[in-house]
Length: 248
Image (cartoon, rainbow, N blue to C red; front, side, top):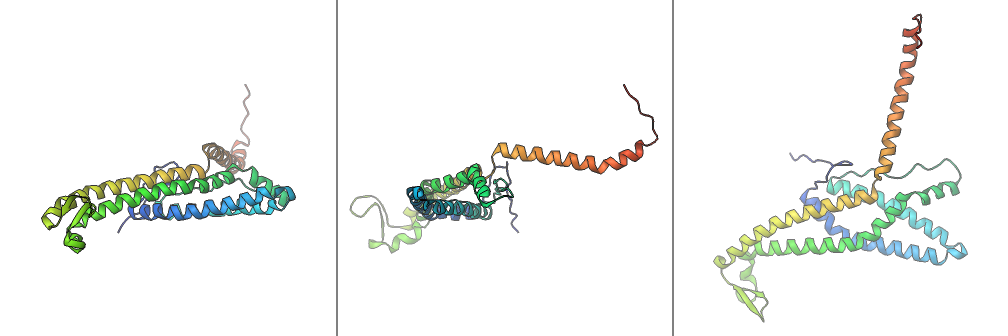
């Protein structure tokens, strides 16, 4: 039975191989859709904001980016075994305008937008590297099997017009298969490194900042101290009753 280790805030991501491959390949289509949609909404919103029609469009863009960021955190948790906490500030209990001002003033909202704009170029690089390394590794590994099914019953590199290398027997294909084993090991290391790097990048943009984490920890410690003080107050008063008080 395989034990899955989930990395929390502050820990180094160690994603699994299968989840890493799937995640890296999906980043390109998700990045294309995310950047295209947000770019269209922000362009339309900014272009028509002077007549107030752009405000609802911009509001929709912000809501979509925050909602998509929550889905992305769940995708990273499921595929890369990395937990990213919600970074948003609590919304005030006021009017709708006050709540929207809080969303716009929250830096986490704009980091969500930046993440999906950057996901497209990063996804292109990750997709190309993943496909190139794994296609090369698997083609070399399977060369002793499929070379006989190629035209002419032989494999020619770099092509049939220019034949620098010709493989037309199983014995000639075995060294290339051995090279494929090394290439596959390199592909595994590269895939995990890319996924771990992307998890750190996502944690930096989609997660809470170090300053907000320190403030939250300080507030939690204050709440704990206050709770202990309130819980021990009556007992301390009862134990101190009737004892002399010493002043210095």
